[in-house]
Image (tube, rainbow, N blue to C red):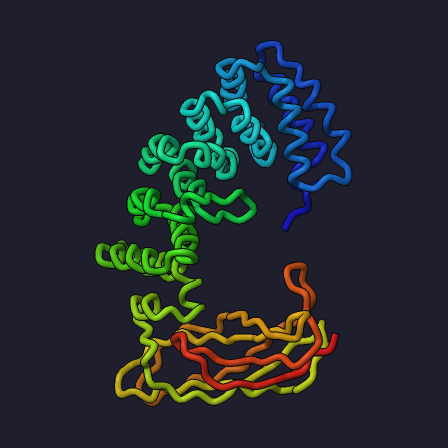
Length: 361
């Protein structure tokens, strides 16, 4: 992922200041231009806040005049990219008392850089009112605006404030997803799938019900969308999600392994293991084959994490054999602890086999 300085650098801020100045109306962008000197050492979030506040200081306090400057800036092809992020955040602040006009302005800005985070304060303030504005976006000719209708309303959008009201009850956004799941744009459909996955984390039955309804009236892209949208349920072995996609948890299989190549490894190394899965049924079996690593926690207990291996259709009696390499390279999102770890196979949500190995730090 790019660094904060790569996303919002001093050059980016200087370009933003020039765009605001060229927008006219006597704007000097003095505060915006000057804040570039204070960027060093700041995180991305801190940079956004600093630049947002500078933009608010430079632009008119009156919302209609504020919006006119930004619409003038939109006529400038240089007004694009990551400089838009703090601008949309400024709209979310200045537009608090101009609810519908501010959301409309965010829709105009989102083709330059997504306003998916900036719409969320409006959804949190008045969900019903915000959805009345956003629902027509599903038919907008610009794919970025259509995507904003789905992405901005995701209950658990990463790196963004959650939407507790939609986590508790996701049904208000289902009409948006129904309107978009057959969209011509993969970019839009990917957002719909991710939104469905968000829903599945808290309401698996709602998510599978929606997916079943879509599969009853599919586009050629619908099965792929549903598979991605139910990926968390599939990895967790949810019987309804697996069955919906043709992966019966009751498929008879013969599993050998996992067989680890080394019983002791160190952080920075990798675990190597072999496995085989045979279709023991008289019909073709459609199998989701995953593996589960039970990591040792600091207190000595273990926590499982599922990793994808493959999705295979095996004829009666057919066997799939493979070797997997699992890295224990240090990463920022996981801390490894020494001890005896376990690895298992998972076929259509059912656990098979078990092997242990000792991890040294």
